[in-house]
Length: 154
View: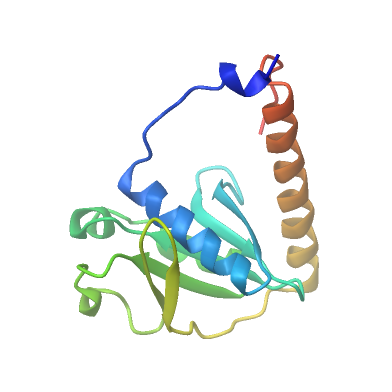
């Protein structure tokens, strides 16, 4: 029996489609990603990308102007990454986005880095905690796909 048959089939929301394209693009640069990553209680980043040299990038996917304007937490994400990016579609008015952040133009299938984010390296202790949490969350998610009937707390 194929256990994937019991997984819920859901339509992806516009932001999730952008996140998929972003994750595909990051993979082409040797990064692995986790969507909806929680660095600490009360914060949830759309995409956390872990690079081949241990670099951590946060990418927030905004599917509309309203989505961007209602995001009051984004500056709280800066302390959890080396670089911070926005990912928007080609119709989004990018002049609304802060110049001191990175920019990706994305769709459901790919993305392109338009503006590289400035680097602000994490402290080694914070990086270690983040990489361990990334690995733990990824392993739990994989386990929940293999055994969807067992509750795995993230």
